[in-house]
Image (cartoon, rainbow, N blue to C red; front, side, top):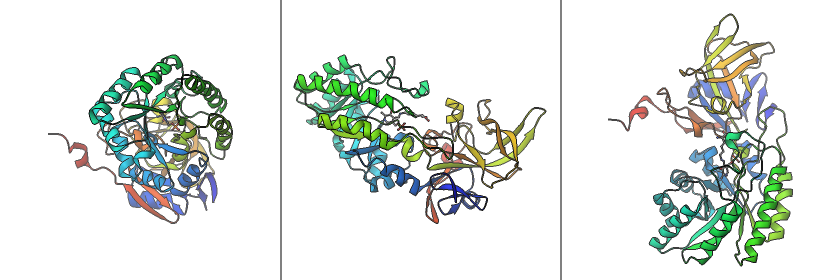
Length: 411
Ligand code: LLP
């Protein structure tokens, strides 16, 4: 098999994920369908074996079967809502491997997490810290906390997913963080256990990690001088992937070479929260061409997936490599659009693509992260099925939604 991405490629002109032809899955399960490679996820996860804990960012792909697979490899979970904690626990991830971040934690979410004994709360404001203290007091527990600091570095990524900049809603500056640590240290109901930062997503320049980590290192030293001792150094997620086939992504080994000496010097344990890097390239979205529409200027491939199924291109103008599931030498310029009633429902504009007819399939690559997890029911479209490939076999890990499921909570 000629691989475009790990474990995904063409064999005898047909697209395969591991040992399974995707057209076979598309015919049996229908389209649109997300297909994931188990091996690709496993291999990507193993790259992070230098950490104390790899807390998979559940928001990137929240399917319980994927979480279970990662749990079996030793993963923890980085969560941002009660729903994500519920999913992680359902997958069997131990509470002591769950971190809980997010700028707007509700009281009931804090209570749920505290009762179950999660590893730590990544705190994003003073108001939140005091709320956690209040809930902990009510439950007569001590809440383990890390303050999410904002190291103010530029990760050079899309502005929508850069989170470590000065004017970001995330985290707090070092000065305010010190105040929060002092409050936590003094409180009977809070335990300062770690420090957290996350500078953005789809980061390709590893120097941003270095810059941020060094700033955080200096801050940890400042904490020590105030006799505040912590244990965990959580450097967040954000390491990017390559959305182009046949290309090397930024090196996880190099990231480890940046982070390891810093945590070693501090005598802390390293946590990372990768999402995209573990599942991003492991998924493809298979969609069927409904119509080929030509006007004077353009050829449109109107496909059965829409921006509700995969939001990234319309939301961020994100690039996803697209190809036919049957390889064809001859290429034409075409624009791939979905059926949604919005002009932004475009997957690719004037791309070199195989000449296709109605009923042919297209694969939208690198859709394992922030694909299904961001899908919606807009235009009253049932969300797609998800399939996990394991060697020569496959399993539906989420059934396609039905018409009934669209209205099940309405009266
Ligand atoms: N930790 C925290 C605190 C985060 O906010 C995020 C992502 C991660 C970890 C995981 O980042 P990753 O390793 O996946 O880059 N929907 C956007 C991405 C939003 C990322 C939000 N936070 C997209 O489709 O590109």
